[in-house]
Length: 233
Image (cartoon, rainbow, N blue to C red; front, side, top):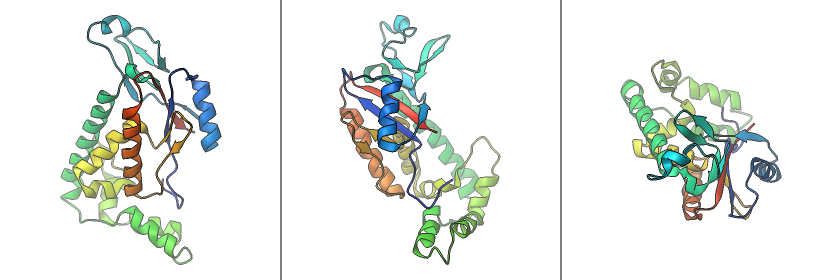
């Protein structure tokens, strides 16, 4: 549930250069030093299996962090060497899920309810006059809108987060683009040299700017760099 403070990071991607200690303990230390928080490994990356030797290496967990072993081998992991993580599949699966969710929203919600004011607008009213519009009142005004109520009441195969309403009302491409980028880098990223990248503020524009910068950084990392995704407690 959003608060009256900037968006708190929920999943943080920690990056390590080749040769650095890149285990769970090292990731926890970086999280604690920069965010004063604790977390657990988040298995969000698909594991890459090379075409020729993948039939053998799929059962080897080297260069992986907190990987899940299935009958077909290692399938997902919280991190590991970049070359062992299938970032393309990770992004594609997230994009497919988001696209299906947006299309269901358009079919069941957008065509049956009028546009609604997104949460950010009501939150801005609270910030402008906190004595006049309390945070509880801002939430009440937001959630009483027919479109938001329809999102909360929907019982089909998808769950619609009303606090993503601005994204839903933007476009399919915007909604999908944010979610596949988030699948790769989470809500904040710690670089190999210890810098914390995160949105400058709570707006969707700030979040998209961060995700674009973080994805560029991730793409430029060497293949022997290590990643670790951490879900904050």
